[in-house]
Length: 82
Picture 1 (tube, rainbow, N blue to C red):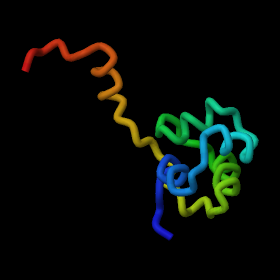
Picture 2 (picture 1 turned 90 degrees about the vertical axis):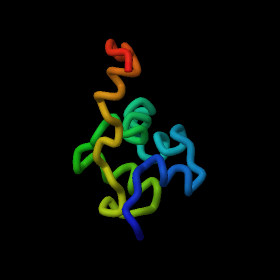
Picture 3 (picture 1 turned 120 degrees about the vertical axis):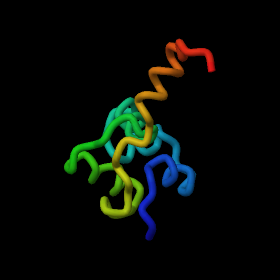
Picture 4 (picture 1 turned 90 degrees about the horizontal axis):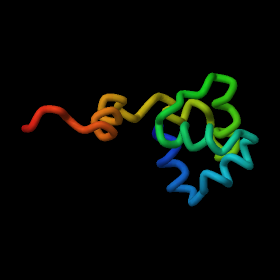
């Protein structure tokens, strides 16, 4: 199996964030942050969503996928006029 992010796995398995939160016994806020690439779960925490999706921890890309610099610019805008 190719390594995939949680959001891709949710889409492929037609699983909602709420369903994953319930199955993994994690707060919905934490599951959403993991799925959106804003939170990198601890090695222990990774086991719960992986098990809930029926896959191995090693089959998931757990790192941040969001560029914090872009978040800042989207929130406040660029001062320079390109």
